[in-house]
Image (cartoon, rainbow, N blue to C red):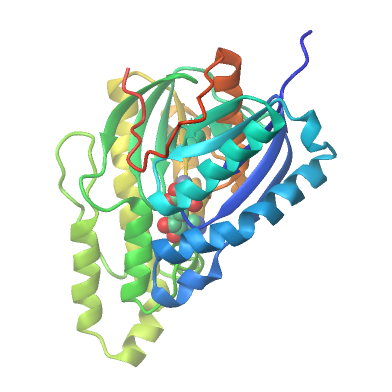
Length: 338
Ligand code: KG4
Ligand code: ZN
């Protein structure tokens, strides 16, 4: 059997600097430096994000290599996130990857961040992996997509948001409630003791398999505006539970339609919002009811991480899909439509 490649992967598309080392589909290290700096601004400030990436990238890459037990000379390729994401953040990762690949004289492999979120399901960590084709709901801070995944290289976009992403609905909703950024995990936590029926929100009406979250966000804003500060504090768990319920119900209603329409019974979720405990619970329930097999990523592979870039890089490596040193970031990189 041929030796599996040792790949160093680098992720820097938004506000997490991450590096990982994989041997084939196995993850040996996956190090992440988060950026606290954005908390007080209620969202990611792009210029601050790129500066923090510059500070973090060398220590994070060193840590990932050290933890893997390999040395730079053992690396067979470097995979990096080319897009989509913030231009300044992508430039840091891309240039670092280029420089290191050139210095080590090894191939450079570009990775699409949205495909990587999906391919995280194929990491060999002992958990069941979906077989192709499968339907994936990718829910992150910047995207909400239903994707029919036909192979590691063939993706069909079935539906997507026409305005805010699901993660934004969580984060902007949390901001309205006076909670710090990123609000998704906080809403998730507060909702655990709340009543999902306490504050009914309107079910968004959007054509086909697309999403829209702006109405839900505005509806939350109007409700909160009518409340006094102490009233809001008491009602916080109920509001969070009801708001989260509406987002999750909406996400799953379209995913179910997509699966039925395309006769797919392997269903996955991916991206930062797939860490949401209510979404994880409800998709499992849906799978049991419909007789579908559902795939939920391990927590460490939900939010941005370089291990997912490594697995996507691995498939590109196998295909011989290398890029030249003049490659530049693509902040609006699309998922392949085949
Ligand atoms: O995939 P990700 O790390 O970054 C992007 O590619 O955008 O996703 C980040 C998003 C944020 O909006 C964050 O609030 C959301 O994922 N998120 C959650 C949870 N954990 C992270 N949303 C709801 N519940 C969670 N437990
Ligand atoms: Zn992401």
